[in-house]
Length: 167
Image (cartoon, rainbow, N blue to C red; front, side):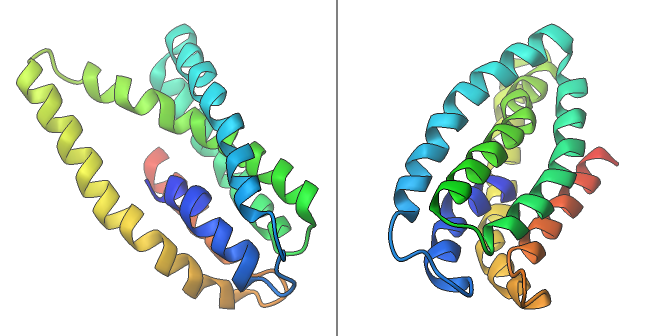
């Protein structure tokens, strides 16, 4: 949940308000481009999970995300519109390696329909409240950790969460 909130909700504000040289326009066009990468990425990641196994794809996605998010978010601190768009689209695709197979994994953990839907509802809502709900505020606070590259702090935060998931 935190990755989605940081990518889709927090980053447009970061690009226009929080970085040293804010983008004067276009951050919302970048978000639209992000969705153009995210939607097919979800389909591809779901297919990969079916072909190679849900856990294998999710763990691979977390490992790749643990490297890509700090580097990508740090790069967003200083790059122009085109580079920001490409970086955001790349991060969205990496994020899908974890996000797409998650629902399938939750459904596979129980044969009982009631248990499956309860589990899916609880996991979705609890993680949205705890990690998603706090991610934008925490990301804003973490921008002060590396003033020359304010996106690094939020990227490291997401990398740490990926490490927790893999552990």
